[in-house]
Length: 108
Image (cartoon, rainbow, N blue to C red):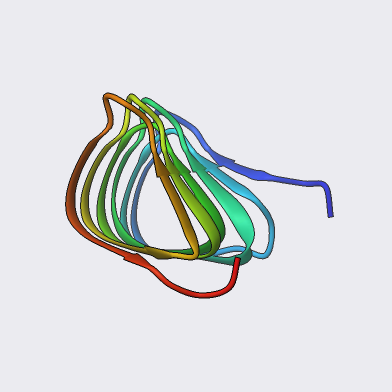
């Protein structure tokens, strides 16, 4: 499936999000996000307070929560993250702010 869901910058969501497709968040989300097997992108303008499960998680904005990825987690230089990260591969760009626990686990 080539479709991707998008949560725009003016959207505020409180609750649980579950998707069977790639998801991009540019707005505000509080709750849980499960896009198992698919990528999740958090843009520079996004503010997320959620536990997240995805194949790949790419963060450019502000995220607070527990992140679990089957593939990898990427924090861009504009990212601010507080919480726990768990993935087989994690990369953090210079300038990204990271506070929390990092666990490199699983198969690459």
